[in-house]
Length: 96
Image (cartoon, rainbow, N blue to C red):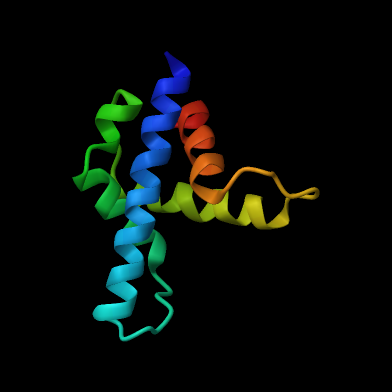
């Protein structure tokens, strides 16, 4: 079912975000990570996003998609009510 797939992608993106927060805090000493999308994409690919979307995806393609979706979300007016992970998961399920 599509809702289950979106929920699974949302959960993976939330896990990715939490892991990235730890990475920024511990490895980067709290410095903003400008290449966040590359890190998120590598983590998501390594943790099975391809299985969730039903096909392989490269880290480069996913990182590009994450950046574009983030820009789309920031420019949306009105802002979507759903959090980043849920919004992005819906876009991934519909597009990738």
